[in-house]
Image 1 (cartoon, helix red, strand yellow):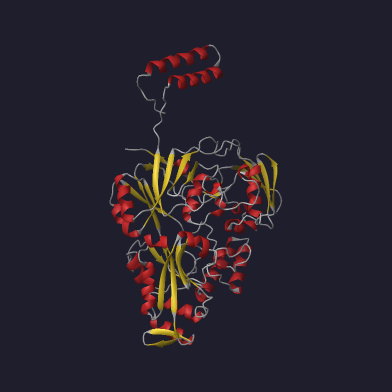
Image 2: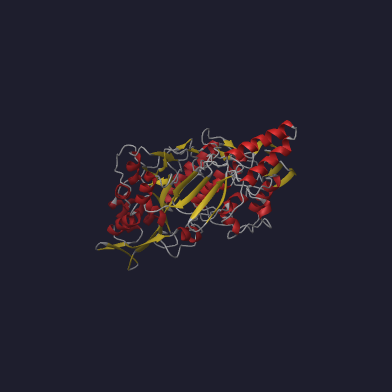
Length: 553
């Protein structure tokens, strides 16, 4: 703490003598209170040098309620406001917790959690086992209309409070690694009237959490203020502000000029300029992200597997990544790695026996389309006497990472003989309609990107949509053989069993092709060099924010 010198220095000395008098008289606790009161009365100012950090993210968070997180921006922001029960330590890749001091099995299907003492919510109330059980019961409540709640719901049977610092959680079956099922954020029971948690409430914009930062979001930014009133957090940064990404050139210039301290995601074309700056450092943010084109099988033409396979051969991935990302085949340290299935190549689930389709194979595609009953007249493909038209949509924010990707894919399919219409999909429409499977009447192809935590669970993308399954199944794809493989993964008790299930899934999807798999594009962040000890956590980013330091030069 730095005290501000000035005309009140003599008053400050008087106060010190005042404190000394009370200490010598033995009235220690009372003297501190009186001294503090005297400070306030005399107007003495103990001014700390505030540490404020501003950064750009891809968008503004849609919701600050962790049950309604949909985008990576949501997950990153919520990691500052809330504590997850367990998280993966980015240094040793082991499950850890800031709120649980230890746990023990209380039978084959129960786990007992012992909470740390002195845990506080941002409003000063105690975080207790009541909040743990409330959160689990909110997840279990069918009136909580949350896709994330549905994903966790099947994992729990009950939660019992033994005392303020002890909760016993019951599972429906024996799990290989039960604490891995507890990676969700804790909610404050006192902030809700019931366990039915709805999305559009004040809590979604002004949440009460227990994480390292408190704050809220507006229509143009989100703010974070250090939460140091609890035993489990002590952030070194006083305030943070999330700003919505502007034009990439504006972001780069603002960062270099010191108007901003960070950019969460820097597109490949802009990385060399930042890498050459002595004021900025670039760091990798491991998202395990991959890009895809989802195919709508409710379209009778795309319902034919031969057509989907033909489209896979008509997409020239090498040409796409060169024209949109600036990466040529054979480039060293390429940020763009082609894939043949729903995992990045570094994943233990990636099936290396499935080759990547790098370029266009027109002869193979033509044979498949003819077999499916399509006819080529001149340069255009027809089916049942009508020219084939494809409506192609892409999540709008992806254009910042791969400029013109939507048009380039449209051009490739146009050159192949398909009429096409292209559309940019807003973040709101993506969350409200596309992910929820309500866009089948609008689009035939959708270009998107999925990002994963270390577990890389893709079940909700491909499982038949019903109840709490298939919650991110874009075009409501359904295949009994795929469902059976996904159930094998869910039932796996050993890592090797889970791996074998997903290796089979990769092979099956590369043949069925509900998606055309494109690539993994690595994600890099840029921060001012004044930032220190900035450990970045895969997927959630800010898990270790307590260690971050920022000091102006």
